[in-house]
Length: 228
Image 1 (tube, rainbow, N blue to C red):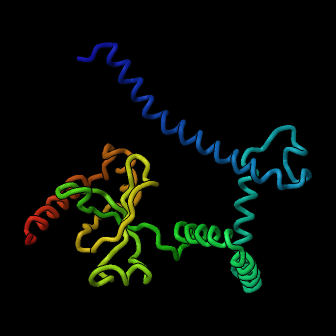
Image 2 (tube, rainbow, N blue to C red):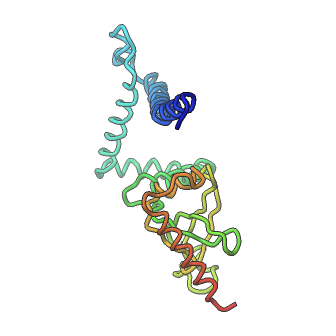
Image 3 (cartoon, rainbow, N blue to C red):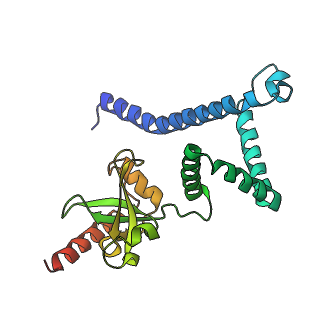
């Protein structure tokens, strides 16, 4: 039977589990809104700012303006005139030695992450790393490009790009090319894989723990059956 002290401790931990994520989410959201407001509001004439004719500040006004502005920019760029102006601007940037590389690299990243036609991570897999018998979670990307494919041994079509993120920060890790046969693709989503990595295995994909263990066991059996 639980003592009153243990009951109070359990109540406190339960409240912490409920309130902690809400507080952190609210803090990050508020910080992001204020950050965008600080960027956008100084660019607007004072007559158009709500705090110019209201006795109080309106949080999020800069964020709304930013969203509407980006949407309008996307609409204008989608037509012929907008595309022509964009090509002229990119041509000017392409003549600048330092800015050219920075712009192209940043544009590729944004196209990959945000564009509907982009090829961001969509598959999670297991690879035998860093040594035999040890399995690491990876995110699968696109096949190697022509500049790399010619230098890979064997058939380049059999290779896949994989990113092995680090725990607890999945934005850092190792990127390498690996034969597709050495990668075991999982049915979990990229979000579930990211949670698994960031929590160091504490947050397991729902109802899929047994499946991952079975896949790892099958992979070990395949490796052991391969001739030395």
